[in-house]
Amino acid sequence: MAPKPRIGLVVFAHGSRVPKANEAVRRVAERAAERCGISIWEAAFLELAEPTLESSVERLTERGAGKIIVTPYFLTMGIHLQRDLPELLRQIAVKRPTLDVSYAPPLDGHPALVDIVADRARELMD
Image (cartoon, rainbow, N blue to C red; front, top):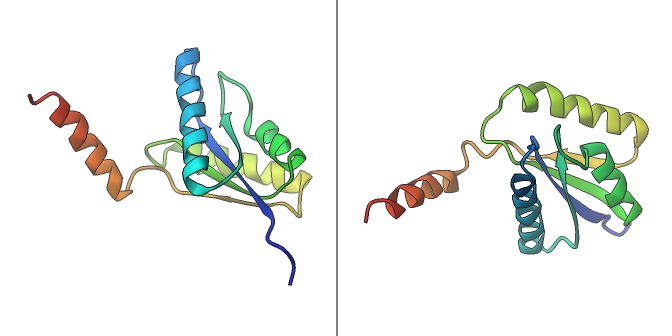
């Protein structure tokens, strides 16, 4: 039986001209990886910030990842997740056909999202 490949996590966001916004995504990526027990992770951005998804995948494979999980940091299934992310993943697959890359759905629809919105509203109720 072959050993399980080392898993890398990419949290994929839109990107912003505001450096603090991009840094917030990096912090989420780091904490999410820690909670999953994943030791190699990256944040990646569609535009306006670095690194790109392709460069993040490259960095993770250089660090030994044989399987990569891409978790979009997008609320809904908009055009970036319908068109852009699949195209970026197709390009990666052409360059790295043996690499196992999978991606999660957007945040919308996750049961915890309602709790988060309710918590934010409660913060202002008192």
